[in-house]
Image 1 (cartoon, rainbow, N blue to C red):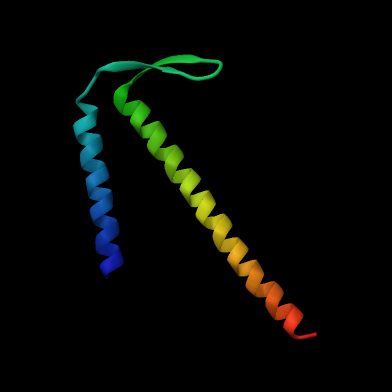
Image 2: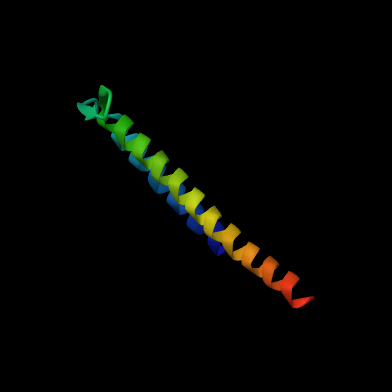
Length: 80
């Protein structure tokens, strides 16, 4: 129950931030290696938020997979 409330709180804070940010129509230039984009500030924030979320999930899945494979390898070598 505590985890569900925590997740709901985080989602509510992020949605509130998006609502406040959507009223800001200020544009900014985003200079990447090969491209130069002019985007709204909220769009840039969403892009980086999603990229950070994806990178964090991939890293946590990588570490979880490494931990599970170590246990699996240890069990298979103990049986021989």
